[in-house]
Structure formats: C-alpha cells, structure tokens
Image (cartoon, rainbow, N blue to C red; front, side):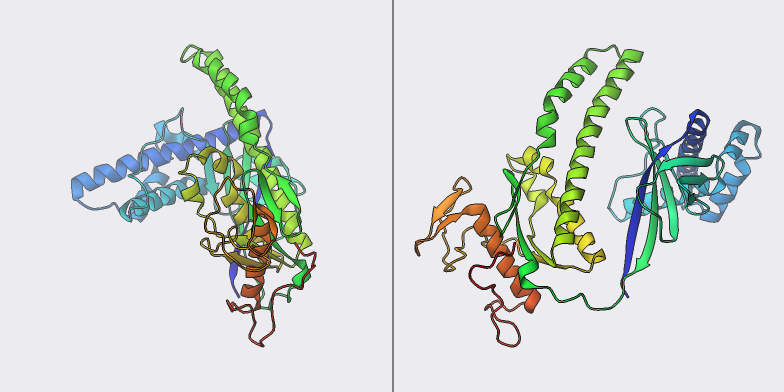
Length: 390
C-alpha cells in the first residue's frame, strides 16, 4: 500500500506567559544551532574531519550543567537535539549541492521556530507543548491520525502556528471507475483562473494586484521611518500584515476551489504547465499571483485522498490550437486571439475550446492511453456530441 503524508496546521493562541515560553524555546533552538555550527567548524579546522554526532549531542547535554548556559534547561531536550539534526541535514544538503553552506542565525532576522518529534498531543482544542503547557489552538479539523512530529513557528505578523505531520497508508483498492459525464477538463489562465469544458468560468481574483495600493502605501511609510526606531518596527509590521492578508486570501480561494472541483467530479483533467518557465516571462507577476502550481498541488493530493481520477496532459499538447469539432490545428493562433474560426466553420472560444480538448485527451488517458481515441476494447472514449460534462 502506498504511504501518504498528511499535514495538520493550526493557529496557536497562547497567553502572555506561554508566548514568552515559546520564544524561550525558539531562542534556545537558535543558540544550539549557532553553537553547534561553530563547534563543527572549529573541530574540522583542528582535526580535519567532522565531529561525531554522539559527541556533539553529549556536549549539548553538558551545556545545561554550566552556569552560563543553565537557562537551556527551560527548553525541551528534544527541541535542542532536533536543532542538531536540522544542522546535520543542512550540511548534507550543502555537500550534495542542494543548498548553500549553513550560516549562523541572527536574533533579529531569524524566524522564531522549533521542532519537537514526540510528546506533542492535541486534545479538546488544546495542544500540550513540553516546558510550555497546554496551549489553546484554533482546531479546524480533528487529528484522526497518529502524528510523528510537530513544528512550531511564528510568522512575520506575530501569530504562532503548529504543524503536525502524520503518515498513513492508502488502500490498494482500485479507484472507482469514472463516469465520463462527471469528468471535467480544466484550462488555467490569467483572465479566467479556470474555464471548464461545460462553460463554467472562475475569474482570476488577482489578490496581489488588488492589494498593491495598500502595499505601496505601507512600504512608503516604512522607508521614511528612522532605522532602529519603534515607529520603524510598527511600519514593518504593517507591511507584513498586508502581505499576510494577500497570502491568506489566495490560500482560502485555492482551497475552496480545488475542494469543490474534487468533490463534485469523478475525474479531473489538467495541463502540465511549466510554472517556473511562465514565471520568467513578462507576465511573471500575474502568473505568480495566480499561483497555478499551488492549485495543481492541491488538486493532486485531494484527488488521491478522495479516490478520484486525475489526468495530467502533456504541456506540448495543442489544446488551444486544435478544433474540438474536427481536430484541425490552427498554427497561426496567437496569445491575443481569444476567439477564432476553424476551417470546418466552427466559431471557437480559445479557453473553452482548450478545456474541451483537455477533457477529451484526459478521457483517452483514463481509458488506457490510446492516442487514436479508442480504448483497449476498441470503443471510442470521446463523449457523445452534446454532452454537458465539464
């Protein structure tokens, strides 16, 4: 059975004392990271090799007995040991050329965060955090799976969040056969975020574009404040709040849209867009604001969890240039052409035509992947003319 990962994320609502305790643990984690990084660099310079992990772990434990670092006893021991594991993984990523060399963490610039692999439990709307106590959370869903670890993080606005990771095995039972009339083709765009083969359109919300006026005003105020002043800190927080609101709005929109599509259809057909490539064009800001990559990620895992079919069409498939009536290709179609006339006489809307072609191609893939439009039994997999499927 395939193993899947599920992540629960809740906002924490600590009181003043608990907020200080969370900051102490985050500060201890940052201290251990910086101390271990300096210790590893010094040991390598002296011995020409990496310090053993067991020795480094024992030295961290010994720090709690020293007068100047006895305050580390106020932090959970697993959080401190996890900082060593995080540093070790950072070194592995560097040696495997996946990231840069680990750096010391600044007290001002580093995001307060820490991880605890065990002993974190969510019960009755509260989470038990070692050395902190039971903290109230905004629990939007039940935690119905055993968790393997918890990450605590404070965002730029000052809100604390907990992320719980759980693993579960999906059953090997086959996904129920999809009804062709409940399979939907989805064309992504900038004017309309999605257009389905049934003609349904969802306008692109453009949250970043709409929030730019407030963002410019907040950033202008920030640039005029004196460095190091309290007003500078307040202005920086105002900018962070604008960014956070845009992020929250976009996330809410994408989750509601993807959940509705998965719940209301047996199968979904989407294009394999090169999001990184689109983000390098002159429309980079619009593509980044649309967050098409995040939409596809949500559709993929929600389809898996809900036992629904998902067909990803090759990015070079001519969904917009091919007539969905006769199959003719229009090689002269440009991005500015929103409508076009085929040689067969059909008048086509660019996005609607693409959505229908994506659905038809997805049905071929779901039926067995035969490019000639027939499945293994020789039956046509295209929907009958006049079908109202998405």
